[in-house]
Length: 427
Image (tube, rainbow, N blue to C red; front, side):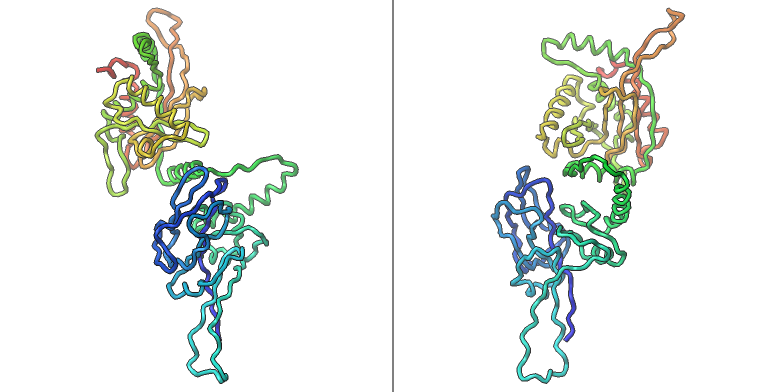
Protein backbone atom coordinates (compact mmCIF):
# COMPACT_ATOMS: atom_id res chain seq x y z
CA UNK A 1 0.00 0.00 0.00
CA UNK A 2 1.31 3.50 -0.90
CA UNK A 3 1.27 6.28 1.71
CA UNK A 4 1.31 9.99 0.78
CA UNK A 5 2.25 12.65 3.35
CA UNK A 6 0.73 16.10 3.47
CA UNK A 7 2.02 18.98 5.59
CA UNK A 8 -0.64 20.50 7.83
CA UNK A 9 -0.46 24.17 8.84
CA UNK A 10 0.30 24.90 12.51
CA UNK A 11 -0.86 28.32 13.65
CA UNK A 12 2.10 30.48 14.76
CA UNK A 13 1.71 32.11 18.17
CA UNK A 14 4.84 34.18 18.51
CA UNK A 15 4.05 37.35 20.48
CA UNK A 16 7.44 38.02 22.00
CA UNK A 17 8.02 39.92 24.22
CA UNK A 18 4.37 39.94 25.34
CA UNK A 19 3.13 37.26 27.71
CA UNK A 20 -0.11 35.46 26.93
CA UNK A 21 -2.46 35.51 29.92
CA UNK A 22 -5.71 34.10 28.55
CA UNK A 23 -6.98 32.53 25.33
CA UNK A 24 -10.61 32.48 24.28
CA UNK A 25 -11.89 30.94 21.04
CA UNK A 26 -14.38 32.57 18.70
CA UNK A 27 -17.31 30.81 17.05
CA UNK A 28 -15.14 28.28 15.21
CA UNK A 29 -15.06 24.63 16.21
CA UNK A 30 -13.21 21.55 14.99
CA UNK A 31 -14.19 20.59 11.44
CA UNK A 32 -15.36 24.09 10.48
CA UNK A 33 -14.43 25.64 7.14
CA UNK A 34 -12.05 28.60 7.54
CA UNK A 35 -11.56 31.56 5.26
CA UNK A 36 -8.52 33.81 5.37
CA UNK A 37 -9.11 36.57 7.95
CA UNK A 38 -11.76 34.69 10.00
CA UNK A 39 -11.53 35.42 13.73
CA UNK A 40 -10.24 32.21 15.24
CA UNK A 41 -9.55 33.32 18.81
CA UNK A 42 -8.97 36.30 21.05
CA UNK A 43 -5.67 36.59 22.87
CA UNK A 44 -5.45 38.51 26.13
CA UNK A 45 -1.92 39.60 27.03
CA UNK A 46 -0.51 41.86 29.71
CA UNK A 47 -0.67 44.68 27.12
CA UNK A 48 -3.91 44.28 25.20
CA UNK A 49 -6.59 41.95 23.86
CA UNK A 50 -6.32 41.21 20.16
CA UNK A 51 -7.93 39.01 17.56
CA UNK A 52 -6.11 35.98 16.14
CA UNK A 53 -7.20 35.75 12.50
CA UNK A 54 -7.00 32.68 10.29
CA UNK A 55 -3.84 33.03 8.15
CA UNK A 56 -5.17 31.04 5.18
CA UNK A 57 -8.12 29.02 3.92
CA UNK A 58 -8.65 25.48 5.11
CA UNK A 59 -10.40 23.44 7.78
CA UNK A 60 -9.93 23.59 11.55
CA UNK A 61 -8.74 20.05 12.24
CA UNK A 62 -7.77 20.29 15.90
CA UNK A 63 -7.96 22.76 18.80
CA UNK A 64 -5.15 21.99 21.23
CA UNK A 65 -5.56 24.85 23.72
CA UNK A 66 -9.05 25.18 25.15
CA UNK A 67 -10.87 28.48 25.63
CA UNK A 68 -10.17 30.21 28.93
CA UNK A 69 -6.72 28.67 29.35
CA UNK A 70 -4.42 31.01 31.28
CA UNK A 71 -0.64 31.53 31.04
CA UNK A 72 -0.24 29.92 27.62
CA UNK A 73 3.52 29.47 27.01
CA UNK A 74 5.09 31.37 24.12
CA UNK A 75 5.24 29.19 20.99
CA UNK A 76 2.64 26.68 22.23
CA UNK A 77 0.76 24.92 19.43
CA UNK A 78 -2.86 26.11 19.60
CA UNK A 79 -4.54 24.58 16.57
CA UNK A 80 -4.00 22.74 13.30
CA UNK A 81 -5.42 23.86 9.96
CA UNK A 82 -5.60 21.42 7.05
CA UNK A 83 -6.31 21.97 3.37
CA UNK A 84 -9.28 19.64 2.82
CA UNK A 85 -12.20 18.44 4.92
CA UNK A 86 -11.20 14.81 4.37
CA UNK A 87 -8.00 15.36 6.37
CA UNK A 88 -9.76 16.54 9.54
CA UNK A 89 -10.51 13.01 10.81
CA UNK A 90 -6.80 12.11 10.79
CA UNK A 91 -6.20 14.58 13.65
CA UNK A 92 -9.09 13.51 15.85
CA UNK A 93 -6.84 11.98 18.52
CA UNK A 94 -3.71 14.04 17.83
CA UNK A 95 -1.75 15.37 20.81
CA UNK A 96 1.03 17.96 20.63
CA UNK A 97 4.41 16.27 21.12
CA UNK A 98 6.39 19.50 20.72
CA UNK A 99 7.57 18.76 17.16
CA UNK A 100 8.32 21.76 14.95
CA UNK A 101 5.53 21.06 12.49
CA UNK A 102 2.90 18.46 11.73
CA UNK A 103 2.90 16.04 8.82
CA UNK A 104 0.07 13.54 8.48
CA UNK A 105 -0.01 10.47 6.26
CA UNK A 106 -3.11 10.15 4.11
CA UNK A 107 -4.38 6.64 3.38
CA UNK A 108 -4.23 5.76 -0.29
CA UNK A 109 -7.31 4.51 -2.17
CA UNK A 110 -8.18 0.85 -1.65
CA UNK A 111 -6.52 -1.45 -4.24
CA UNK A 112 -8.70 -2.76 -7.07
CA UNK A 113 -7.89 -6.41 -6.27
CA UNK A 114 -8.42 -7.57 -2.64
CA UNK A 115 -5.22 -8.53 -0.88
CA UNK A 116 -4.94 -12.27 -0.16
CA UNK A 117 -5.14 -11.93 3.63
CA UNK A 118 -7.44 -13.83 6.01
CA UNK A 119 -8.80 -10.63 7.54
CA UNK A 120 -8.97 -6.99 6.42
CA UNK A 121 -6.17 -4.78 7.74
CA UNK A 122 -7.02 -2.18 10.40
CA UNK A 123 -7.60 1.41 9.19
CA UNK A 124 -4.34 3.25 8.55
CA UNK A 125 -3.18 5.29 11.53
CA UNK A 126 -1.93 8.83 10.89
CA UNK A 127 1.75 9.30 11.62
CA UNK A 128 3.24 12.59 12.77
CA UNK A 129 6.80 13.52 11.91
CA UNK A 130 8.85 16.69 11.57
CA UNK A 131 9.71 17.91 8.08
CA UNK A 132 13.37 18.15 7.15
CA UNK A 133 14.58 21.49 5.78
CA UNK A 134 17.59 21.10 3.53
CA UNK A 135 20.83 22.60 4.87
CA UNK A 136 19.13 23.72 8.08
CA UNK A 137 20.97 23.06 11.33
CA UNK A 138 19.21 21.09 14.01
CA UNK A 139 17.27 23.29 16.41
CA UNK A 140 14.79 22.86 19.20
CA UNK A 141 12.96 26.10 18.33
CA UNK A 142 9.78 25.95 16.29
CA UNK A 143 9.78 27.60 12.85
CA UNK A 144 6.39 28.86 11.70
CA UNK A 145 5.98 29.10 7.93
CA UNK A 146 3.29 28.57 5.33
CA UNK A 147 3.39 25.25 3.44
CA UNK A 148 4.39 27.00 0.20
CA UNK A 149 7.22 28.87 1.96
CA UNK A 150 8.49 25.58 3.44
CA UNK A 151 8.35 23.89 0.04
CA UNK A 152 10.29 26.66 -1.72
CA UNK A 153 12.81 26.85 1.13
CA UNK A 154 13.43 23.12 0.84
CA UNK A 155 13.88 23.33 -2.93
CA UNK A 156 16.32 26.25 -2.65
CA UNK A 157 18.13 24.97 0.43
CA UNK A 158 17.25 28.04 2.51
CA UNK A 159 17.52 28.12 6.28
CA UNK A 160 14.17 29.31 7.62
CA UNK A 161 15.62 29.72 11.11
CA UNK A 162 17.71 32.63 9.81
CA UNK A 163 14.48 34.64 9.41
CA UNK A 164 13.73 35.94 12.88
CA UNK A 165 10.35 37.53 12.12
CA UNK A 166 8.23 36.97 9.04
CA UNK A 167 5.57 39.26 7.59
CA UNK A 168 2.72 36.84 8.25
CA UNK A 169 0.40 36.55 11.23
CA UNK A 170 2.35 36.97 14.49
CA UNK A 171 5.66 36.75 12.65
CA UNK A 172 5.03 33.61 10.60
CA UNK A 173 7.15 33.21 7.46
CA UNK A 174 5.51 33.77 4.07
CA UNK A 175 6.91 33.33 0.56
CA UNK A 176 7.91 36.99 0.24
CA UNK A 177 10.08 36.64 3.37
CA UNK A 178 12.35 34.00 1.81
CA UNK A 179 14.57 36.67 0.27
CA UNK A 180 15.68 37.49 3.82
CA UNK A 181 16.97 33.97 4.45
CA UNK A 182 20.09 34.14 2.29
CA UNK A 183 20.87 37.70 3.40
CA UNK A 184 20.51 36.67 7.04
CA UNK A 185 22.94 33.79 6.58
CA UNK A 186 25.47 36.05 4.85
CA UNK A 187 25.20 38.76 7.51
CA UNK A 188 25.57 36.16 10.25
CA UNK A 189 28.74 34.86 8.63
CA UNK A 190 30.12 38.40 8.42
CA UNK A 191 29.24 39.00 12.05
CA UNK A 192 31.47 36.14 13.15
CA UNK A 193 34.45 38.09 11.83
CA UNK A 194 33.98 40.78 14.48
CA UNK A 195 35.49 38.96 17.43
CA UNK A 196 34.70 40.34 20.86
CA UNK A 197 31.96 42.67 19.61
CA UNK A 198 29.58 43.78 22.36
CA UNK A 199 25.94 44.25 21.39
CA UNK A 200 22.36 43.73 22.51
CA UNK A 201 19.44 42.49 20.38
CA UNK A 202 16.25 44.43 21.00
CA UNK A 203 12.94 42.78 20.18
CA UNK A 204 10.99 44.59 17.46
CA UNK A 205 7.83 45.97 19.06
CA UNK A 206 4.43 45.82 17.40
CA UNK A 207 4.34 49.53 16.62
CA UNK A 208 7.97 49.55 15.42
CA UNK A 209 7.19 46.67 13.05
CA UNK A 210 4.19 48.53 11.63
CA UNK A 211 6.24 51.72 11.20
CA UNK A 212 9.01 49.79 9.44
CA UNK A 213 6.62 48.15 6.98
CA UNK A 214 4.77 51.38 6.18
CA UNK A 215 7.95 53.40 5.66
CA UNK A 216 9.48 50.69 3.49
CA UNK A 217 6.28 50.49 1.45
CA UNK A 218 6.28 54.28 1.08
CA UNK A 219 9.87 54.51 -0.19
CA UNK A 220 9.46 51.52 -2.50
CA UNK A 221 6.13 52.46 -4.07
CA UNK A 222 5.87 56.27 -3.93
CA UNK A 223 7.94 58.39 -6.37
CA UNK A 224 9.19 60.98 -3.86
CA UNK A 225 10.65 64.32 -4.85
CA UNK A 226 11.72 67.15 -2.55
CA UNK A 227 11.43 70.96 -2.59
CA UNK A 228 13.16 73.19 -0.03
CA UNK A 229 12.84 76.86 0.90
CA UNK A 230 14.01 79.13 3.72
CA UNK A 231 11.27 81.13 5.41
CA UNK A 232 11.90 84.43 7.21
CA UNK A 233 10.03 84.09 10.51
CA UNK A 234 10.82 87.48 12.05
CA UNK A 235 7.20 88.59 11.65
CA UNK A 236 5.92 85.32 13.11
CA UNK A 237 8.20 85.81 16.12
CA UNK A 238 6.86 89.33 16.71
CA UNK A 239 3.23 88.26 16.34
CA UNK A 240 3.78 85.23 18.58
CA UNK A 241 5.30 87.39 21.34
CA UNK A 242 2.40 89.85 21.10
CA UNK A 243 -0.27 87.14 21.17
CA UNK A 244 1.34 85.23 24.04
CA UNK A 245 1.36 88.43 26.09
CA UNK A 246 -2.36 88.89 25.43
CA UNK A 247 -3.12 85.22 26.19
CA UNK A 248 -0.92 84.91 29.27
CA UNK A 249 -3.82 85.29 31.71
CA UNK A 250 -5.62 82.41 29.96
CA UNK A 251 -2.60 80.14 30.41
CA UNK A 252 -2.12 79.84 26.64
CA UNK A 253 1.33 79.85 25.05
CA UNK A 254 1.58 79.55 21.29
CA UNK A 255 4.56 77.78 19.73
CA UNK A 256 6.18 78.29 16.33
CA UNK A 257 4.80 74.88 15.39
CA UNK A 258 1.23 76.11 15.92
CA UNK A 259 1.83 78.79 13.28
CA UNK A 260 3.41 76.18 10.98
CA UNK A 261 0.37 73.88 11.27
CA UNK A 262 -2.01 76.75 10.54
CA UNK A 263 0.07 77.82 7.53
CA UNK A 264 0.14 74.21 6.26
CA UNK A 265 -3.65 74.04 6.48
CA UNK A 266 -4.25 77.35 4.70
CA UNK A 267 -1.65 76.62 2.00
CA UNK A 268 -3.45 73.32 1.38
CA UNK A 269 -6.71 75.21 0.88
CA UNK A 270 -5.00 77.50 -1.64
CA UNK A 271 -3.37 74.55 -3.46
CA UNK A 272 -5.82 71.65 -2.87
CA UNK A 273 -3.90 69.21 -5.09
CA UNK A 274 -1.47 68.78 -2.18
CA UNK A 275 -4.35 67.88 0.14
CA UNK A 276 -5.07 64.60 -1.64
CA UNK A 277 -4.79 60.80 -1.52
CA UNK A 278 -3.45 58.51 -4.23
CA UNK A 279 -6.16 55.81 -4.58
CA UNK A 280 -4.76 53.87 -7.59
CA UNK A 281 -7.74 54.46 -9.89
CA UNK A 282 -8.60 57.96 -8.61
CA UNK A 283 -6.97 60.90 -6.82
CA UNK A 284 -9.13 61.87 -3.84
CA UNK A 285 -8.97 65.62 -3.15
CA UNK A 286 -10.26 66.64 0.29
CA UNK A 287 -12.24 69.79 1.05
CA UNK A 288 -11.12 70.09 4.69
CA UNK A 289 -7.51 69.89 5.87
CA UNK A 290 -6.69 67.35 8.59
CA UNK A 291 -3.04 67.84 9.57
CA UNK A 292 -1.15 64.79 10.90
CA UNK A 293 1.53 65.93 13.36
CA UNK A 294 4.46 63.57 13.95
CA UNK A 295 5.04 62.86 17.65
CA UNK A 296 7.94 60.80 18.98
CA UNK A 297 7.08 58.36 21.79
CA UNK A 298 8.97 55.65 23.67
CA UNK A 299 7.28 53.04 21.47
CA UNK A 300 7.91 54.82 18.17
CA UNK A 301 6.57 57.55 15.91
CA UNK A 302 2.85 58.27 15.79
CA UNK A 303 0.90 60.97 13.95
CA UNK A 304 -2.15 62.30 15.82
CA UNK A 305 -4.41 64.51 13.73
CA UNK A 306 -5.53 68.13 14.09
CA UNK A 307 -8.87 67.84 12.30
CA UNK A 308 -10.14 70.73 10.16
CA UNK A 309 -7.05 72.79 10.99
CA UNK A 310 -7.98 75.21 8.19
CA UNK A 311 -11.10 76.22 10.15
CA UNK A 312 -9.47 76.45 13.59
CA UNK A 313 -7.74 79.39 15.22
CA UNK A 314 -4.20 79.29 16.58
CA UNK A 315 -5.37 78.88 20.19
CA UNK A 316 -7.52 75.84 19.34
CA UNK A 317 -4.73 74.30 17.24
CA UNK A 318 -2.27 74.81 20.11
CA UNK A 319 -4.68 73.17 22.56
CA UNK A 320 -5.29 70.21 20.22
CA UNK A 321 -1.57 69.61 19.64
CA UNK A 322 -0.71 69.66 23.37
CA UNK A 323 -3.61 67.34 24.24
CA UNK A 324 -2.89 64.86 21.43
CA UNK A 325 0.87 64.82 22.07
CA UNK A 326 0.28 64.05 25.76
CA UNK A 327 -2.13 61.22 24.92
CA UNK A 328 0.32 59.85 22.33
CA UNK A 329 3.18 59.67 24.85
CA UNK A 330 0.88 57.99 27.37
CA UNK A 331 -0.29 55.48 24.74
CA UNK A 332 -3.91 56.57 25.15
CA UNK A 333 -4.74 57.73 21.61
CA UNK A 334 -7.80 56.16 20.04
CA UNK A 335 -7.53 54.92 16.42
CA UNK A 336 -9.80 57.77 15.31
CA UNK A 337 -7.22 60.27 16.61
CA UNK A 338 -4.30 59.01 14.53
CA UNK A 339 -5.74 57.13 11.54
CA UNK A 340 -6.36 59.30 8.51
CA UNK A 341 -5.12 62.84 8.00
CA UNK A 342 -4.73 64.55 4.63
CA UNK A 343 -1.22 66.07 4.94
CA UNK A 344 1.58 65.67 7.50
CA UNK A 345 4.09 67.83 9.38
CA UNK A 346 7.29 66.56 11.00
CA UNK A 347 9.28 69.07 13.09
CA UNK A 348 12.81 68.22 14.27
CA UNK A 349 13.85 71.82 14.82
CA UNK A 350 13.79 71.43 18.60
CA UNK A 351 16.62 68.89 18.24
CA UNK A 352 18.84 71.34 16.37
CA UNK A 353 18.34 69.66 12.99
CA UNK A 354 18.85 72.33 10.33
CA UNK A 355 16.95 70.56 7.55
CA UNK A 356 15.87 67.07 6.52
CA UNK A 357 13.58 65.20 4.13
CA UNK A 358 10.64 63.25 5.53
CA UNK A 359 9.05 60.07 4.16
CA UNK A 360 5.48 60.44 2.90
CA UNK A 361 2.74 58.91 5.04
CA UNK A 362 0.62 56.95 2.50
CA UNK A 363 -1.94 57.41 1.07
CA UNK A 364 -1.23 61.11 1.68
CA UNK A 365 0.59 63.00 -1.08
CA UNK A 366 2.75 65.43 0.94
CA UNK A 367 4.66 65.84 4.19
CA UNK A 368 6.46 68.98 5.36
CA UNK A 369 9.79 68.58 7.20
CA UNK A 370 10.58 71.53 9.49
CA UNK A 371 14.13 72.22 10.65
CA UNK A 372 15.59 74.58 13.24
CA UNK A 373 15.72 78.38 13.19
CA UNK A 374 18.97 79.77 11.76
CA UNK A 375 20.20 83.36 11.94
CA UNK A 376 21.33 85.00 8.72
CA UNK A 377 22.53 88.45 7.67
CA UNK A 378 20.26 90.00 5.04
CA UNK A 379 20.43 93.36 3.19
CA UNK A 380 18.95 96.35 5.01
CA UNK A 381 18.32 99.82 3.60
CA UNK A 382 19.14 101.45 6.95
CA UNK A 383 22.46 99.68 7.50
CA UNK A 384 25.38 99.10 5.12
CA UNK A 385 26.32 95.93 7.01
CA UNK A 386 22.82 94.44 6.79
CA UNK A 387 20.75 93.04 9.64
CA UNK A 388 20.25 89.68 11.35
CA UNK A 389 17.11 87.70 10.56
CA UNK A 390 15.73 84.33 11.63
CA UNK A 391 15.07 81.77 8.90
CA UNK A 392 13.31 78.42 9.07
CA UNK A 393 14.43 75.69 6.65
CA UNK A 394 11.53 73.56 5.40
CA UNK A 395 11.41 70.71 2.87
CA UNK A 396 8.24 69.44 1.21
CA UNK A 397 8.20 65.77 0.17
CA UNK A 398 5.69 65.14 -2.63
CA UNK A 399 4.19 62.11 -4.37
CA UNK A 400 4.86 62.83 -8.05
CA UNK A 401 1.82 60.75 -9.05
CA UNK A 402 -0.40 63.33 -7.35
CA UNK A 403 1.56 66.58 -7.08
CA UNK A 404 3.64 67.79 -10.04
CA UNK A 405 6.75 69.86 -9.39
CA UNK A 406 5.09 73.15 -10.32
CA UNK A 407 2.17 72.41 -7.99
CA UNK A 408 4.53 71.57 -5.14
CA UNK A 409 6.35 74.86 -5.76
CA UNK A 410 3.03 76.75 -5.65
CA UNK A 411 2.19 75.15 -2.32
CA UNK A 412 5.58 76.09 -0.82
CA UNK A 413 5.22 79.64 -2.12
CA UNK A 414 1.80 79.95 -0.46
CA UNK A 415 3.16 78.46 2.77
CA UNK A 416 6.10 80.87 2.88
CA UNK A 417 3.88 83.88 2.16
CA UNK A 418 1.59 82.96 5.05
CA UNK A 419 4.45 82.69 7.55
CA UNK A 420 6.22 85.83 6.33
CA UNK A 421 2.93 87.75 6.60
CA UNK A 422 1.32 85.90 9.53
CA UNK A 423 -1.46 88.48 10.01
CA UNK A 424 -3.07 87.05 6.88
CA UNK A 425 -3.65 83.78 8.77
CA UNK A 426 -5.91 85.65 11.20
CA UNK A 427 -8.25 87.00 8.52
